[in-house]
Image 1 (cartoon, rainbow, N blue to C red):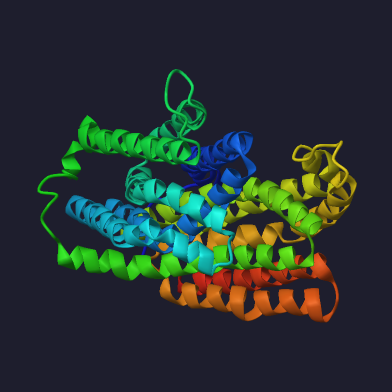
Image 2: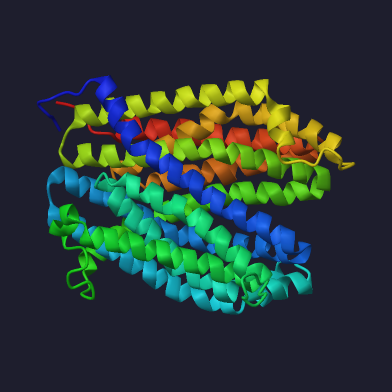
Length: 453
């Protein structure tokens, strides 16, 4: 793979940031949607809040494997753009949408009968009943959520990241207003409580989906791809390509998110205050992670373009630059976490609460460990983005699963309970798992990436 023209590192950095920053913003805005739901339902009732938290957790666990197909759209479209193959752009995006819609239809019956699932998970009967009320409506949002992810990948691979950001940002006040009306029964609407929160979420998801689909189908610059022309016609070859690339992505994401979910469960065994501190620090850490996730998406797109256009030198130069940007941000985060942990944690605490000093003290310790794994967490997600750009997902899935569950989880359990380190041991185990993933995935990319002749 060769290419006659070599971009400077500064040009690579500019292009990566132009793509990545709007995606970072959209990821942060997506987090804010969840925060708004949590805060507003928390005002309504504690039991309703608990039910929504466990219900959305179940929704997320089901969503993650299906998101692999939507995530596969981005690298496939990026490679096709690089190769100048407009027909393949359409085929990959269309079958990504097909698989996303099909997955949403197949999984909805579980949400309709979710009370039994929640009871089996040990939830209280009243929480399980309310959780089912939420999911019978909220589960309808699976198809819009997956379609949004697939169409975002399509648009981002075509360089249209600004619209992705603004649609997500606009959804925040719309969701807040609908919550205010439907949860509490304002402006003459009935008071629907947790069902109102579900209706608001699905309504905003559906509206966002329609806006993005209209943009993708009607924008003059994108019409040449004919995304929705004969949309009903199956393309089994392209569907197979999306499926083969996408399912390992979904499993990889499930392995990583499952690691953090299992850690939360084990932290609950240790103590309520420790679990509260864990939740707060994880929320802060997740905000920083969104930056690396956006850069990882940009890495997928730019690597895919270079891979499709047979530009091995540009592919490797671009990879070095995005790794450098991510590492630099990680160092800034480390300095922040070590320098100002108390003010950050205090944002989530009522200082008058009797448990606040203990939560704050343990949270400061966790912030220091979080600083320790910032570089590893950044490098593993960037490596995954780079590997998706060259359509390498199966071996990375295995490497990630072994790192998270074969090394990280046993180490976390052993340090926490066998060696008596408690919550600190859990987070040190997390750090080890992420470090192993970072090293193995980065090695895999540099070994697998095409070399210039």
